[in-house]
Image: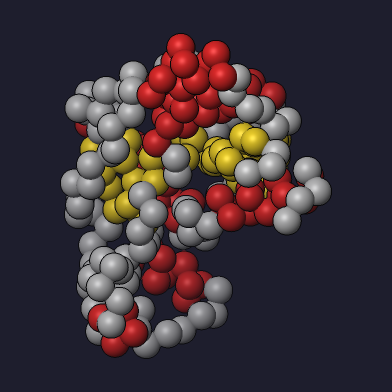
Length: 219
């Protein structure tokens, strides 16, 4: 069974930077969770690293440390923070970026009133997944193909070459995967589509944030 990894970093005003890594199986069941102790950059680091400080802390120090603690293999590691992508090349697993957007049905009047929400239909994968759990909603129309690419641009980050990153729609989310070989990207997308039947690919980051707050005893 293919497992999926999720990494994010919390910037807590009192505690500092705390990273969390969650591994789920295809059914969305948690298999492993790790989090770091809080860290704060020194004034010297802020001066010397400049704009490269955040990718260094998020990607090289925090994310790489978290992955090294894990005993499980994953098909890909997803992150919702572009600075975490600096770990690419430092870990033995593919890394992908998930955009903070949700694909909606354009017939839903509540979505039309919110201009900040992308005006799109939910994907076939997520619709079938919800039906398998006995969830039936009239607004979940299958009018948006998950095979279409939205060409979302990965934000620029120091030390990261985004030239060969390609965006894909998986379930009800948009992700970006690096690599010059389209075959490798398509294989990853295929694996993610299987997991997207049961997991909203952005939801696990909420679990991580709550687990970090519980572990470090803050609200």
